[in-house]
Amino acid sequence: MKARQAADVATPDAATAGTPDAGTANAGTADPTVAGPGAASGVVVGPDGLSRPAWAATDPLMREYYDTEWGVPVAGERAVFERLSLEAFQAGLSWATVLRKRPAFRELFHDFDPDAVAALTDADVERLLGEPRIIRNRAKILATRTNARATLELRADGGLEALVWSFRPETTPLPCTMDEVPSRSPESVALSKELRRRGFAFVGPTTMQALMEAIGIVDTHLVGSHRRGVSGLWKPDGTRA
Image 1 (cartoon, rainbow, N blue to C red):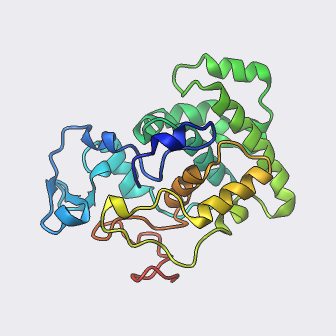
Image 2: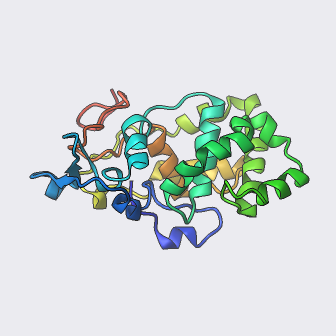
Image 3: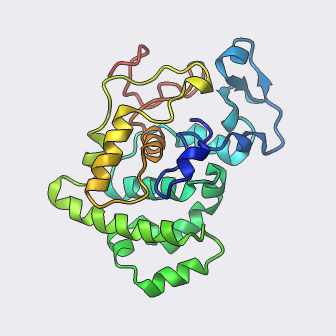
């Protein structure tokens, strides 16, 4: 994960790079210590003795997400649709903001059931724009409805989950520092292009790289993090297991 690039959020359907904002790493009250080798590798050791990247080392919400969700394989149409939707809502914002609002998103977007979201009316969109518990961005809300409808269309051709996972690469990165974590890849560019062809919106290459990291398609946990290899899909040398 990396802090999202300003150039990426300048366009309406590009999100920031694959990591939550670096600024969120300073939130909270914990005082993690930079590890000996971690000083070079980018991981820090928290009060619990576990090594994490700085962005997940202090804010309790971000730490919980990193320790339990980020990079764990996600399966199922609804689950993949939810992650794709939330990555789009993050564009220009911190991931911590999205996480704090996720319960409300789930409530108001029918737990990201594509059938229910696809059926949202224009009146529903206006209602959502008046809801302070979520990110009130008209383009992103409309894109979520558009993407739900595109997801329904995909059912006749294998489905959203199969399409997204078909872009899993043959190797995954082995980053030792945050500078070595890619913000996009040939696979994320190709996935973005294919989803756009299928009628999806807010699915730029950096947004898709973030999605691929979040749902375990690639493993960009820093080498030295206690979560490296958690997906079980990759060998230590970065090749497929």
